[in-house]
Length: 381
Image (cartoon, rainbow, N blue to C red):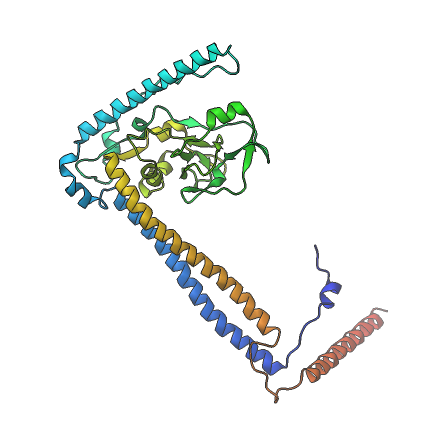
């Protein structure tokens, strides 16, 4: 909608005496200056909270938050060699279990007259090369019972989400990259699917960690953990890690992938396009990951959830105060232009006299312009 000059002229405006206008301006500048200082302090505090969050995550995945726990459980800790051997054994066992479940599903499908889609055979167990020495040299040191190894050891294969077209209504929500916010799922702005085959194949399980493989350069690689809030499937721009629960704790994995080390590695391996970056499943599987015992992972996750919950609450409080600051700014302006911000002085020149002077000056200016225009026309003639 366009505001024309004539429409602008018809807008009613409250006119205060000149002296009062000056007092209003001085008061607005005073209050706005105080408000700006408060807003700046809030923004500084928010930035410091983000620095603190990353510092806590850094310490967590260097083993510093659980140093005492390790000391108390020293006799129960495996060596890095034992830990890796067990991880590989768990991975093989999980794959064999998947094969058995697939064979049982095929048998049931055949017994039921081969009705519906035939169960899909698990993909061949991907090979994982040991992490390179050149990579570990760039990683922070970890406790002697930990080891840096590739993320691929924790999964029998990462999985891309559904590429089927979603609808505004349907049976089951389809979580997309926009639903990942601050390592959690936001259940607003959902789309849906009612395709039974898609639902069976991509239905999320409690504890699934999803990785955003395609997004803007600053957001690619963000993750969230599914906690069975409601049945849902996941879209194609997301990757399900399919981590083995006896090897890696869901929240430990989720929080690590949001740490500085993981984000830094992601920035190194991502492929950049026009306004978008991509980290595919193979690159995700090659991420360096700090492995430790599952019990210590859960202890780290417990400590982090407590600390980060406080950080989130504080950030939320700051955001509310910033919103209130914006509302207060508008309230100041409303009071200013309704005569409530400063006291009126009976000695001020009445606004009616000010208006008479404005009209007189306007009439004088109009007359001068008319006189100049007449002289110009005579000269031209």
